[in-house]
Image 1 (cartoon, rainbow, N blue to C red):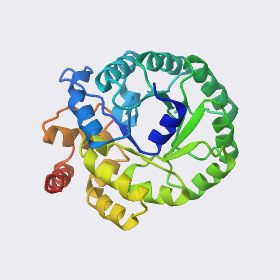
Image 2: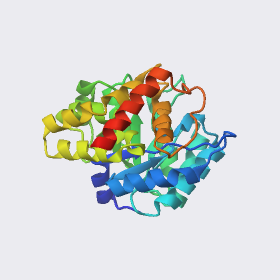
Image 3: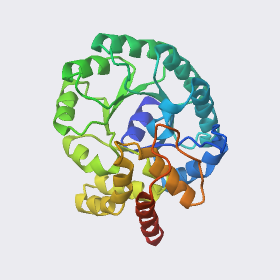
Image 4: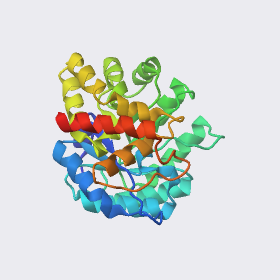
Amino acid sequence: MTDATGLRNSLTGISGILVTPFDSADRIDPKRLQPVIDGAIDAGVHLLVSNGNTGEFYSLTLDEALAMVAETARMVDGRAPLIGGVGRSVQDACALARASAEAGCAALMVHQLPDPFVSPRGTVDYLRRIADAANGLPLVLYIRNDTAGTDAIADVCAIPSVVGVKWATPNPMRLAAAMRACDPDIVWVGGLAEIWAPTFYAVGARGFTSGLINVWPERSVAIHAALERQDYAEARYLIEGMRAFEDVRAEENGGANVSGVKAALAMLGRDCGHARPPAAWPLTDDQSTRITDVLARAKKS
């Protein structure tokens, strides 16, 4: 278990969002994840996330998500802090919170609710239920839509268990407003991966989420190091070298997000299987070619 100070320090690093491997019969196959985890930890990725969006959280059954957090914790084996993703119905979220605590996770990442009828005060109640089930684990909120407004964001961030926010909306001015409205001890993490990290750093966020760590963790670590020493020219240079990877992932309304990662892993001999519907699978020939080019540059670096 990571203490609160250690967790906050880790959140200012790279939050590596792990894929969920599937076998040819479309069953989860956690053991395929071991070399991905080992590579990320060896490269210096600061913390890992099970059951995140790159882990296809919304395509998993509750039983699959429960199994993945337990198996991922076993493979990480205390070498880095692990955050367990929770969400969907309040009952599912609480079950995942309890399982993540039992597995030894350092914190929970609460996915933004997909329910079409979400009220700000209902969201506060939802988070309090999760906090009660979490056995004292800190909460990291995942904000992918800022339309609720700054006051509503401040209300959810006022829950005592909340220690961090992963900001995943491309609106740095609203991020700045939310930061001003909330407890200064909360860690604000760039939730749109490496490409948006310099923009969010300029506003005051620290650290970033990354799916690239499954494939090229050394590049993510180098980008983070450049940002931390405020070498924005170097950070931009390093980001340009992996931009084509993120461009592919952003295509088809983001439906190629996980597909790009899993295709790259297969090309590297670390096959984690397919991406489940409704993801775009397989990649098109053009998308595959661009991913291949990125991996070729990775080998030269």
